[in-house]
Image 1 (cartoon, rainbow over the protein chains, first blue to last red):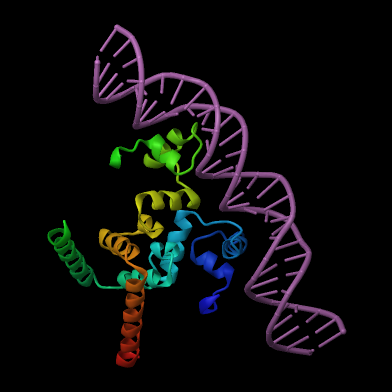
Image 2 (image 1 turned 90 degrees about the vertical axis):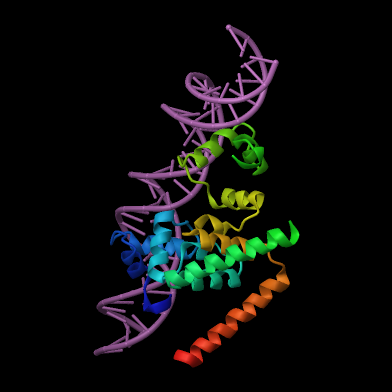
Length: 95
Length: 95
DNA sequence: ATCTGTAACTAAGAAGTTCTTAGTATTAAT
DNA sequence: ATTAATACTAAGAACTTCTTAGTTACAGAT
């Protein structure tokens, strides 16, 4: 486990009960059980990644969403504008 | 519902049993129940979006992952390379 | 080697969730 | 008003995770 964080400590950080944190985190890490959305989004907060990260099918998509996630709001807005321009070009170019 | 697809028909496309497709899809669409990962990834296939799409926190991230998802493998590789170059610059620039 | 403390891991019943069944309600067309 | 198709729902069945109560594995001290 990264950061020297034990399964139990991570569980506690996620707001789990002291008695259950260790077992639950272990079940998740070993793939025995799956975390519900609430737990998943708390894990995302602790690991500083977007929830979408956990569902990325390849490492490039994963990198992409993590980098996007950490951008300033202004930069996100610029990317939004850029994507809209690309859309317009595609419509006039091949529609 | 888009595409003139009824809840039942979408359910059947996802491989659900004829008797249960309608109720289940309705429960999902109304937010009464949540689809498990298998159903979710089948929905993603039908809608031609990556699974990560359903977990994107803002519309720009959603657009980004959908656009990336539809790129050719070659283009994905190019983006991978670009991201690696950005990483190197960040390390020499501020590390 | 043995003791001690911490972390990893697990089985099994409790608790909570979704899935299935069997419908009712709504809508649109005739 | 009737019909057909779709949307929607309650409630029990089936299935999943959560909690409990441990055991197992490992590292450090003696």
